Image (tube, rainbow, N blue to C red; front, side, top):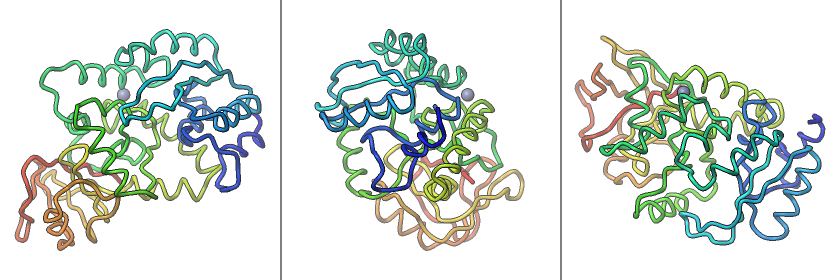
Amino acid sequence: MEREKIAKYLSEDPAGPRCRSLRPDDLAGLVAGVKSVIYTSVTGAEDAAAMDALCADLGLKKVVLGRKTRVDGNRSNVDILIGTDTRKLRAAERSYARLIGTEWGLALGYPECCVQAYVNWRNSRRRGDLVASIAANSPKGRPFSFLTNNVCNYYSLLFRPGDPKRYAALLAANPDFDLGPVIPWHPCSYSCPRSLAAGLGIYRVLVHYMPTFAAGRRAQLSKPVLFWDKFRFAVLNGTASAGPEGGLTVDCRGVAGPRTLLARGTVDELDRRSVLRFGRSGKLYGPGAPALPPGYALLPFS
Ligand SMILES: [Zn+2]
Protein backbone atom coordinates (compact mmCIF):
# COMPACT_ATOMS: atom_id res chain seq x y z
CA MET A 1 0.00 0.00 0.00
CA GLU A 2 1.31 3.41 -0.94
CA ARG A 3 1.65 6.02 1.78
CA GLU A 4 -0.17 8.76 -0.12
CA LYS A 5 -3.10 6.47 -0.75
CA ILE A 6 -3.23 5.32 2.87
CA ALA A 7 -3.12 8.98 3.93
CA LYS A 8 -6.27 9.58 1.90
CA TYR A 9 -8.23 7.10 4.03
CA LEU A 10 -6.45 7.46 7.39
CA SER A 11 -7.09 11.17 7.43
CA GLU A 12 -8.28 13.83 9.83
CA ASP A 13 -9.65 15.89 6.95
CA PRO A 14 -13.44 15.96 7.38
CA ALA A 15 -13.78 16.35 3.60
CA GLY A 16 -11.77 13.17 2.94
CA PRO A 17 -13.41 9.97 1.66
CA ARG A 18 -15.28 8.05 4.36
CA CYS A 19 -16.57 4.51 4.61
CA ARG A 20 -19.21 4.70 7.32
CA SER A 21 -18.44 1.54 9.29
CA LEU A 22 -14.72 1.24 8.66
CA ARG A 23 -12.91 2.11 11.87
CA PRO A 24 -9.52 3.86 11.78
CA ASP A 25 -8.06 1.32 14.23
CA ASP A 26 -9.11 -1.54 11.93
CA LEU A 27 -7.57 0.07 8.85
CA ALA A 28 -4.45 1.00 10.86
CA GLY A 29 -4.18 -2.67 11.88
CA LEU A 30 -4.06 -3.64 8.22
CA VAL A 31 -1.47 -0.95 7.42
CA ALA A 32 0.62 -2.02 10.42
CA GLY A 33 0.54 -5.62 9.20
CA VAL A 34 -1.05 -6.69 12.50
CA LYS A 35 -4.16 -7.89 10.67
CA SER A 36 -4.74 -8.99 7.11
CA VAL A 37 -8.54 -9.17 7.14
CA ILE A 38 -11.09 -6.60 8.33
CA TYR A 39 -14.71 -7.43 9.10
CA THR A 40 -16.85 -4.38 8.39
CA SER A 41 -20.05 -3.42 6.58
CA VAL A 42 -21.51 -1.04 4.05
CA THR A 43 -24.84 0.76 4.14
CA GLY A 44 -26.43 1.87 0.89
CA ALA A 45 -25.10 2.39 -2.63
CA GLU A 46 -23.01 5.49 -1.88
CA ASP A 47 -21.19 3.80 1.01
CA ALA A 48 -20.64 0.65 -1.06
CA ALA A 49 -19.11 2.76 -3.86
CA ALA A 50 -16.81 4.50 -1.34
CA MET A 51 -15.68 1.08 -0.08
CA ASP A 52 -15.04 -0.16 -3.62
CA ALA A 53 -12.95 2.95 -4.33
CA LEU A 54 -10.93 2.36 -1.16
CA CYS A 55 -10.31 -1.29 -2.08
CA ALA A 56 -9.22 -0.32 -5.60
CA ASP A 57 -6.91 2.42 -4.28
CA LEU A 58 -5.29 0.27 -1.59
CA GLY A 59 -5.22 -2.96 -3.59
CA LEU A 60 -7.56 -4.79 -1.21
CA LYS A 61 -9.89 -7.63 -2.04
CA LYS A 62 -13.52 -7.63 -0.90
CA VAL A 63 -15.80 -10.53 0.01
CA VAL A 64 -19.53 -9.85 0.45
CA LEU A 65 -20.95 -11.90 3.32
CA GLY A 66 -24.54 -10.76 3.15
CA ARG A 67 -27.20 -9.07 5.16
CA LYS A 68 -27.70 -9.87 8.83
CA THR A 69 -30.07 -8.27 11.28
CA ARG A 70 -27.74 -6.66 13.72
CA VAL A 71 -28.04 -6.58 17.44
CA ASP A 72 -28.89 -2.88 17.19
CA GLY A 73 -31.80 -3.73 14.87
CA ASN A 74 -30.15 -2.23 11.79
CA ARG A 75 -31.20 -4.27 8.73
CA SER A 76 -29.67 -2.14 6.01
CA ASN A 77 -26.03 -3.14 6.57
CA VAL A 78 -24.32 -5.62 4.30
CA ASP A 79 -21.45 -7.39 6.04
CA ILE A 80 -18.21 -7.58 4.11
CA LEU A 81 -14.61 -8.64 4.56
CA ILE A 82 -11.73 -6.69 3.05
CA GLY A 83 -8.10 -7.62 3.14
CA THR A 84 -4.80 -8.32 1.52
CA ASP A 85 -4.63 -12.11 1.80
CA THR A 86 -7.06 -14.16 -0.32
CA ARG A 87 -6.49 -17.36 1.66
CA LYS A 88 -7.28 -15.63 4.96
CA LEU A 89 -10.29 -13.87 3.45
CA ARG A 90 -11.67 -17.24 2.36
CA ALA A 91 -10.97 -18.74 5.79
CA ALA A 92 -12.83 -15.86 7.42
CA GLU A 93 -15.72 -16.26 4.97
CA ARG A 94 -16.02 -19.96 5.87
CA SER A 95 -16.10 -19.29 9.62
CA TYR A 96 -18.48 -16.30 9.39
CA ALA A 97 -21.53 -18.45 10.15
CA ARG A 98 -19.99 -19.48 13.47
CA LEU A 99 -18.88 -16.16 14.90
CA ILE A 100 -18.13 -17.66 18.32
CA GLY A 101 -15.60 -20.22 17.09
CA THR A 102 -11.87 -19.64 17.36
CA GLU A 103 -11.50 -19.85 13.55
CA TRP A 104 -13.28 -16.54 13.09
CA GLY A 105 -11.04 -14.58 15.47
CA LEU A 106 -7.89 -16.21 14.10
CA ALA A 107 -8.94 -15.48 10.50
CA LEU A 108 -9.33 -11.81 11.47
CA GLY A 109 -5.75 -11.80 12.77
CA TYR A 110 -6.44 -11.60 16.51
CA PRO A 111 -3.82 -13.18 18.83
CA GLU A 112 -4.57 -16.84 19.50
CA CYS A 113 -4.34 -16.48 23.30
CA CYS A 114 -6.93 -13.69 23.20
CA VAL A 115 -9.28 -15.55 20.82
CA GLN A 116 -9.12 -18.64 23.04
CA ALA A 117 -9.77 -16.61 26.21
CA TYR A 118 -12.82 -14.96 24.62
CA VAL A 119 -14.24 -18.30 23.41
CA ASN A 120 -13.64 -19.90 26.83
CA TRP A 121 -15.40 -17.01 28.52
CA ARG A 122 -18.30 -17.14 26.05
CA ASN A 123 -18.73 -20.89 26.60
CA SER A 124 -18.50 -20.79 30.39
CA ARG A 125 -21.77 -21.25 32.22
CA ARG A 126 -21.11 -18.88 35.07
CA ARG A 127 -19.52 -16.08 33.14
CA GLY A 128 -19.69 -12.57 34.50
CA ASP A 129 -18.75 -9.54 32.48
CA LEU A 130 -15.92 -10.06 29.97
CA VAL A 131 -14.01 -6.96 31.12
CA ALA A 132 -14.15 -8.11 34.75
CA SER A 133 -12.87 -11.54 33.72
CA ILE A 134 -9.95 -9.97 31.76
CA ALA A 135 -9.16 -7.78 34.79
CA ALA A 136 -9.14 -10.88 37.02
CA ASN A 137 -6.60 -12.39 34.62
CA SER A 138 -4.32 -9.31 34.76
CA PRO A 139 -1.50 -8.44 37.18
CA LYS A 140 -2.52 -6.59 40.34
CA GLY A 141 -1.05 -3.46 41.85
CA ARG A 142 0.23 -1.77 38.70
CA PRO A 143 -1.32 0.25 35.88
CA PHE A 144 -2.52 -1.27 32.58
CA SER A 145 -1.44 0.14 29.20
CA PHE A 146 -4.07 2.17 27.34
CA LEU A 147 -3.27 0.00 24.31
CA THR A 148 -5.41 -2.86 25.65
CA ASN A 149 -8.33 -0.76 26.96
CA ASN A 150 -11.53 -2.40 25.63
CA VAL A 151 -14.04 -0.99 28.12
CA CYS A 152 -16.04 0.79 25.38
CA ASN A 153 -15.52 -1.88 22.71
CA TYR A 154 -18.90 -3.62 22.45
CA TYR A 155 -17.86 -5.86 19.57
CA SER A 156 -19.06 -9.44 20.30
CA LEU A 157 -20.52 -8.34 23.65
CA LEU A 158 -24.12 -7.46 22.83
CA PHE A 159 -25.88 -10.79 22.95
CA ARG A 160 -28.14 -10.69 26.02
CA PRO A 161 -31.80 -9.71 25.49
CA GLY A 162 -31.52 -6.31 27.21
CA ASP A 163 -28.20 -5.36 25.61
CA PRO A 164 -29.34 -3.59 22.41
CA LYS A 165 -31.60 -1.23 24.37
CA ARG A 166 -28.91 -0.37 26.90
CA TYR A 167 -26.29 0.04 24.20
CA ALA A 168 -28.61 2.39 22.28
CA ALA A 169 -29.11 4.42 25.48
CA LEU A 170 -25.36 4.70 26.01
CA LEU A 171 -24.79 5.82 22.40
CA ALA A 172 -27.64 8.33 22.67
CA ALA A 173 -26.04 9.83 25.80
CA ASN A 174 -22.70 10.28 23.99
CA PRO A 175 -23.47 11.35 20.42
CA ASP A 176 -20.08 12.92 19.65
CA PHE A 177 -17.85 10.81 21.86
CA ASP A 178 -15.00 8.66 20.50
CA LEU A 179 -15.64 5.27 22.09
CA GLY A 180 -13.08 3.41 19.97
CA PRO A 181 -10.20 1.22 21.17
CA VAL A 182 -6.67 0.78 19.78
CA ILE A 183 -6.89 -3.00 19.37
CA PRO A 184 -10.16 -4.03 17.73
CA TRP A 185 -10.35 -7.33 19.69
CA HIS A 186 -10.68 -8.28 23.36
CA PRO A 187 -7.34 -9.11 25.04
CA CYS A 188 -6.88 -12.20 27.21
CA SER A 189 -5.23 -10.04 29.86
CA TYR A 190 -4.52 -6.32 30.11
CA SER A 191 -0.85 -7.27 30.02
CA CYS A 192 -1.05 -9.75 27.10
CA PRO A 193 2.33 -9.34 25.32
CA ARG A 194 0.87 -10.10 21.88
CA SER A 195 -1.95 -7.58 22.27
CA LEU A 196 0.47 -4.96 23.60
CA ALA A 197 2.88 -5.45 20.66
CA ALA A 198 0.06 -5.40 18.09
CA GLY A 199 -1.56 -2.41 19.82
CA LEU A 200 1.70 -0.48 19.65
CA GLY A 201 1.94 -1.21 15.90
CA ILE A 202 -1.62 0.05 15.33
CA TYR A 203 -1.12 3.08 17.55
CA ARG A 204 2.08 4.11 15.72
CA VAL A 205 0.23 4.02 12.39
CA LEU A 206 -2.54 6.18 13.87
CA VAL A 207 0.03 8.64 15.26
CA HIS A 208 1.72 8.85 11.86
CA TYR A 209 -1.40 9.48 9.78
CA MET A 210 -3.86 10.95 12.30
CA PRO A 211 -1.83 12.53 15.13
CA THR A 212 -4.61 14.62 16.67
CA PHE A 213 -7.07 11.76 16.56
CA ALA A 214 -4.47 9.36 18.03
CA ALA A 215 -3.65 11.76 20.87
CA GLY A 216 -7.33 12.17 21.70
CA ARG A 217 -7.93 8.43 21.72
CA ARG A 218 -4.87 7.85 23.88
CA ALA A 219 -6.00 10.51 26.38
CA GLN A 220 -9.41 8.86 26.59
CA LEU A 221 -8.07 5.31 26.98
CA SER A 222 -5.36 6.26 29.52
CA LYS A 223 -7.75 7.04 32.35
CA PRO A 224 -8.52 4.66 35.23
CA VAL A 225 -11.98 3.11 35.15
CA LEU A 226 -14.17 2.01 38.03
CA PHE A 227 -16.15 -0.80 36.52
CA TRP A 228 -19.40 -2.53 37.56
CA ASP A 229 -20.55 -3.89 34.22
CA LYS A 230 -20.34 -3.05 30.52
CA PHE A 231 -23.01 -0.36 30.80
CA ARG A 232 -22.21 0.89 34.28
CA PHE A 233 -18.71 2.25 34.78
CA ALA A 234 -17.01 5.53 35.63
CA VAL A 235 -13.98 6.78 33.71
CA LEU A 236 -12.02 8.73 36.32
CA ASN A 237 -10.42 11.99 35.27
CA GLY A 238 -7.00 11.30 36.73
CA THR A 239 -4.13 8.89 37.06
CA ALA A 240 -3.56 5.58 38.83
CA SER A 241 -0.26 4.73 40.45
CA ALA A 242 1.10 2.02 42.70
CA GLY A 243 -0.07 2.60 46.28
CA PRO A 244 1.00 1.18 49.64
CA GLU A 245 1.09 -2.57 50.26
CA GLY A 246 0.39 -3.66 46.69
CA GLY A 247 -2.66 -1.43 46.30
CA LEU A 248 -3.35 1.44 43.90
CA THR A 249 -3.97 5.13 44.42
CA VAL A 250 -6.03 7.20 41.99
CA ASP A 251 -5.67 10.99 41.97
CA CYS A 252 -8.73 12.29 40.21
CA ARG A 253 -10.77 15.32 39.37
CA GLY A 254 -14.17 13.75 39.10
CA VAL A 255 -15.74 11.50 36.53
CA ALA A 256 -14.92 12.04 32.84
CA GLY A 257 -16.94 10.94 29.81
CA PRO A 258 -18.51 8.95 28.37
CA ARG A 259 -21.78 9.10 30.28
CA THR A 260 -22.75 5.58 31.23
CA LEU A 261 -25.82 4.02 32.81
CA LEU A 262 -24.25 4.27 36.29
CA ALA A 263 -26.63 5.76 38.88
CA ARG A 264 -26.34 9.53 39.17
CA GLY A 265 -25.78 9.26 42.95
CA THR A 266 -22.71 7.05 42.41
CA VAL A 267 -21.27 9.53 39.89
CA ASP A 268 -21.90 12.40 42.36
CA GLU A 269 -20.20 10.43 45.12
CA LEU A 270 -17.10 9.93 42.92
CA ASP A 271 -17.16 13.54 41.70
CA ARG A 272 -16.61 14.74 45.26
CA ARG A 273 -13.31 12.84 45.70
CA SER A 274 -9.81 13.87 44.71
CA VAL A 275 -8.03 10.75 45.96
CA LEU A 276 -9.24 7.15 45.90
CA ARG A 277 -7.19 4.49 47.66
CA PHE A 278 -7.57 0.86 46.69
CA GLY A 279 -6.11 -1.94 48.78
CA ARG A 280 -4.45 -5.05 47.48
CA SER A 281 -7.84 -6.76 47.30
CA GLY A 282 -9.06 -4.01 44.96
CA LYS A 283 -11.46 -2.50 47.51
CA LEU A 284 -11.60 1.17 48.47
CA TYR A 285 -10.37 2.04 51.93
CA GLY A 286 -9.30 4.96 54.07
CA PRO A 287 -11.00 7.96 55.64
CA GLY A 288 -13.46 9.55 53.27
CA ALA A 289 -13.68 6.52 51.00
CA PRO A 290 -16.94 6.86 49.06
CA ALA A 291 -19.85 4.53 49.78
CA LEU A 292 -20.37 2.77 46.46
CA PRO A 293 -22.55 -0.10 45.29
CA PRO A 294 -20.67 -3.41 45.67
CA GLY A 295 -19.20 -5.39 42.80
CA TYR A 296 -16.79 -2.85 41.31
CA ALA A 297 -13.31 -3.46 39.93
CA LEU A 298 -10.65 -0.80 39.36
CA LEU A 299 -9.10 -0.95 35.88
CA PRO A 300 -5.96 1.19 36.27
CA PHE A 301 -5.45 2.24 32.64
CA SER A 302 -2.62 4.66 32.15
ZN1 LIG B 1 -3.62 -12.59 24.52
